[in-house]
Amino acid sequence: MNTALIVLGQVFIILILMAVGAAAYKTKMISEKAADDMAAFALKIVTPCVIIQAFQIDFDPHKLFNMLIAAILSILTHIVGIVLAKLFFREDTDGNKVRRFAAIYSNCGFMGIPLIQGAVGNEGVLYACVYLVVFQALMWSHGVMTIKGGFKSIKPYKIFVNAGTIGIAVGLPLFFFSVKLPDVLSQAVGHIANLNTPLAMIVSGVYVAKSDIKKAFTRPKNYLSVSLRQIIVPLIMMAVILAFPINPTVALSILLIAACPVASSVTLFAALYGSARDLECAGRTLTLSNILSLATIPLIALIYAKLLEILG
View (cartoon, rainbow, N blue to C red):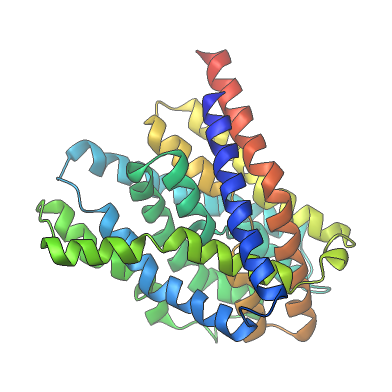
């Protein structure tokens, strides 16, 4: 029960930060262009710093083993999402390509890492970073193919060169050899990494504020996509996690990140590779997902906590 309350508290903190972003946009303190620039900065600069900071710990074989388990669970989470999305959205019409993407890819960077950092701690961020690398590799390959409907727009270098892999490339050797950054550099990286939660949530608040919230609630298919992303996939992963003796920090980290709302990049991918209708569908699905996540994330945490009590 304590876990669910902690998660609920973190969700409310996120809600407050998003409300600040929404208010700043509505009062014209932050423009849409400024929000886009902030999002790019968060993705390209802040995310690698978060990952590097997470790896600033002494090498521990147990943590390395847990990272491998986190990688397996991360891959499995995406496979479950891919299978279910294809099953429920067979046709490529009426925004279904976007809904497939939305059902598979979670907001693991912008919302996942801040949520896990608050609810689980820095060790949880380490496993969230593993999920982020899997997410980035699949999103820039399978994700592009999902929206575009083919392989032509896939850029292979983006599968291997992105914010997640850059952070891992720097942080992993430091972890293996237990190398600590010089104090001045470490503090600088830490300060940038600490921007992740407020910056990401304020930007998310701007995106929600500029969406047509009323229209977001009018398409039943959007509810199905969001339900797959935030309820069905997490429940399936919960069953898998409870079936095996998995480290509790790894289990909760992967479960929470699997329960996060739709990836904010759904709008970017719809704009780059989809149609105007796809972009409209992406904006509505993203808005619906963010709003409903305020209830679904604590719900998943509560169910998990209850099952842990029952199973002993």
